Length: 268
Ligand SMILES: [Zn+2]
Image (cartoon, rainbow, N blue to C red; front, side, top):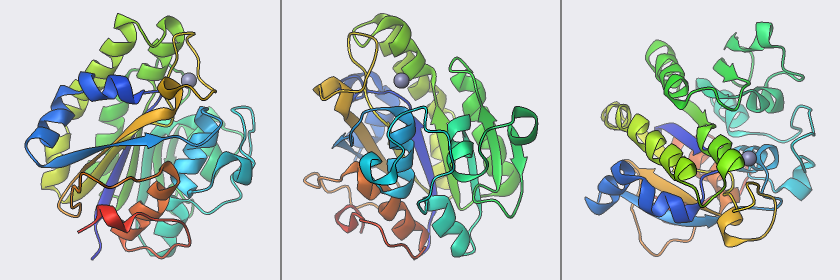
């Protein structure tokens, strides 16, 4: 069965904070309408390498996207590629590095910030390039794409939690409140997405440490949440999904052929 899918990446959100700060998402879990899993991110725990891992299922040391400064097109096939090959529509409201990985590199704001190009892997996009670009605007950008284009696969990628972590650290009210704010913003859209038949996944690329950074092996840097919501998920409490399985999992939901590790134990 083919489903539409929305993937939300809350950049830099550690599992330990996701577990207690996201009251709206946890309401779905407590009501038996969603599940929360703990993922251990691949290494290194950096953004661009893990966007690539989540979206292609390939670990950084194999993709070659090994740090944030590797500024080139991905040479792997991503969810966007598999979806397009299956004739499905794609869209993203995301940081500009996502455009650089799958559409065009380097990013040229005047050309790429607003993308509407049926022949590109990400056909419709709003791409921002400031870490303090408000999450409120980002979620509105994503909803605009959904309403206007009804994409089969939509990526929604926010940056304010990571930004607060780099300014104030893991153990700060600012970091925790950025997570709470993202959860409240998501509350405006989530039920509408589910009612429209989307399967929704909410995760993070990496976590955050008390030194206001991330790259290492500390639990707070590596452990991230994966919330799943929608009729296609079995919500099995014992499943142990891996970050590199998200690409294959989403392709399976979309009904798009792929050659990546997947996670059928999450699905009905
Ligand atoms: Zn960061």
